[in-house]
Length: 123
Image (cartoon, rainbow, N blue to C red; front, side):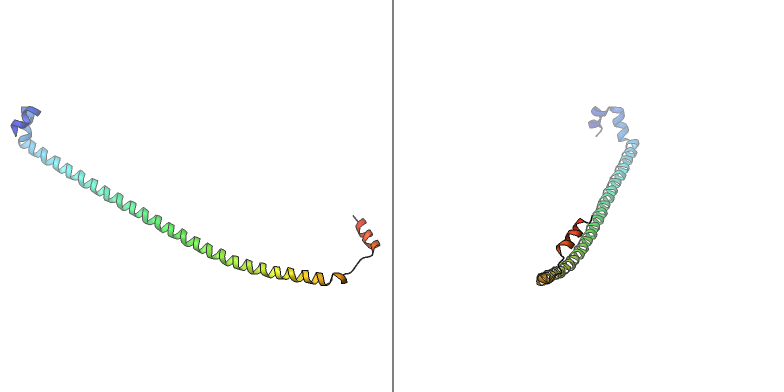
């Protein structure tokens, strides 16, 4: 192994890496690498959980809005039924007034021409 590292790193660095210092350095690098891996893994899991929670909150908000929309639609349909009933009642009343006016048109109270002229001159 020393023969492979010597041309690349030099004899002093290669012998230092293969000695006790190199072993401790290698153990330290392994510990740091493992710690970084665990930290990255934990951060990824936390990010996924946060995104899942946000998605659940969005779904709950969409459901709430859908329920509110359905309730508003039901109220609007009820109001439409009420308005249609009132409209039918008013149309029947209007038709009755027209019939009464047509039946009584010959019996209506007529003013004399002089009275009509006096009323027109009042301003």
